[in-house]
Amino acid sequence: MTVEYKLIRSKRKSVSIHIENGKVIVRAPRIYPVYEIEKFIHKKEKWINNHINKQLSKPQISYHNSDVISYLGEEYTLIIIEKSIQEKVELDDNNIYLYSHYKKENEAHNKKILDKWIENSCLEIFTEKYNELFKLFDYKNKPPLFLRRFKSRWGAYHKRGFKDKITLNINLIMYPIECLEYVIIHELSHKTHLNHSKNFYNLVEKKYPNWKKSKAILDGKID
Ligand SMILES: [Zn+2]
Image 1 (cartoon, rainbow, N blue to C red):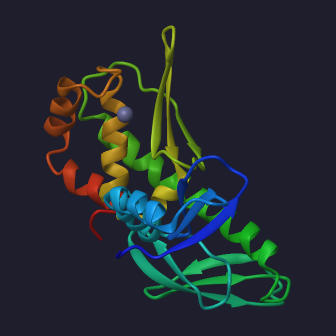
Image 2 (image 1 turned 180 degrees about the vertical axis):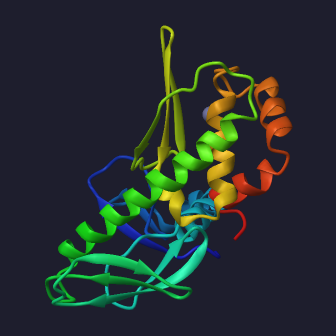
């Protein structure tokens, strides 16, 4: 048995496996034999490892002093300057400086300042990239661009009648710029093909030959 797991027994009737924060949680009925549970886990081992890798490789934004933050694929140390007169965020080669009115430990307030700064950066960087990459297509109408914090998708293309729009996940700011480029190309290609057919990926490939590398980074398969 190579998988480590936490077993929770309860009144339930069947066995289930969940990955929470990179850890395996198995739920089983009260009198279910351990060897059956382990057999079940063994069968699911590949799925389990894939999911653990996916969760662990997802960069997270955190708001503690001296935490490491990914920004455009580079790592920065968050330095909080407390009790500042002016609230702002500044960036140099190694650090992100967050100036707060309050104490370092006020995580909710740190989050407020940093999230606002991230949203503004995204608006600027995503819009510029979007306008640049739109030119690769022969489309007449540019779908308006929206930003959101999606939990489980990098972008979305929506079409209703003649109107369409593209939404990008703000969390893309943590990844190298090639990832953002790929997601923009992906969503813009949906303007031609609404599905994920072979024709769709042919179009993506034509507009952005290096797309597989970006996708693999987003899927957590490579760094
Ligand atoms: Zn898609």
